[in-house]
Length: 463
Image 1: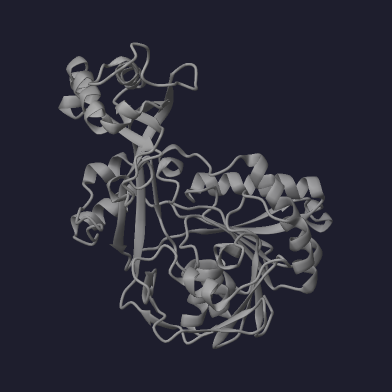
Image 2 (image 1 turned 30 degrees about the vertical axis):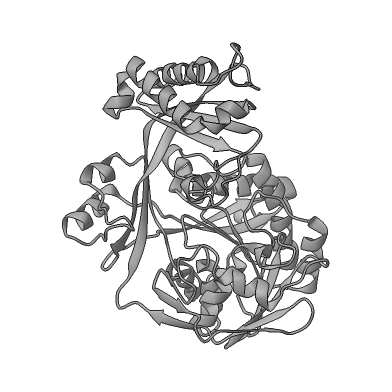
């Protein structure tokens, strides 16, 4: 990139594949931006993408969102960065995303220079670091076992800004970067750092920008950051939206356990002296952020494995007599199921009820004590095999449907069941077996590769 400060970085959506307004996108591109960055992954949906190799959305959704971006890359010479490709950012998902970009470029008649960054972690490396005491306990004080490392079906490290900075430092031109698992703000911060932006400003800008228009009112769509050495300004791409000091400050706290010091790869973002001020009705200026670098590199390692199989049922209860004693009723259902399926008592299978309409979202943290007029029961069973999970789930559903209770006035079923079959196999269940910080000193990680995709230039085709 040859841009000088200020630079304009555009994130058209919070997550690739979720859709965005094409009119807003084209208008923003026509106004001029220096870089488009879009996140493509997260651990928010849970470990299944890493454990099973699944993608966050369908290939059709990726293709729909990517096609206009790739056209903008070609028509306006705007580099595009896709981070955490495919959802978990494994090497396989990076390869799939690269193949999709290749196909779309060919269909659009484009020739694109693509750089890929891998994030897979060799199990031997992680096991060695674990044995040497170079992996920290997680937030629950737990360390992984060597078995956790060896049996992980997906194992990645979360890259910071360094791999992107290394690509930029070479000066070799590119059109698209497709990166594996990355700290969400890392690509935004790297491009700002490359242009001499203060580290605190670069990382704070990336923290806000990576979620797209989530920092706007109303939220959604895209956002543009105009980045100077010591400040940045945010404007939403949607004309009916606005960024306010409150909306931007609030998003600084998003997904963070404390409001002032925000840890990430390479150090801590310190926003204690940060100032948010309105530039106009739709734009906010942010300044005063500082970055406190770590004394040595530390990376988060994420690993996932299949830990069982799940089956579930859903039903509704409208009887006020049963709702008033629902907790003891469900305990009786669970005891009855445990007598018929000793795997529940032995711990090789598990049962969970979610009572929607009462505390299905917050569970025991729910502050409301109001008695609802109806509730929805979601029962989920996890067991070692799909057959056992379904068998236990059927037993539990029958108990909820037919077990008697004090004060019962009807002898028919206790619960309305909207689906048929009444219980359904969900499939394999994954768990994060590693979600830990690892000392990354003396490691050569995140391999970079260059590839030409789409229509091959004539001069290369004749070689």
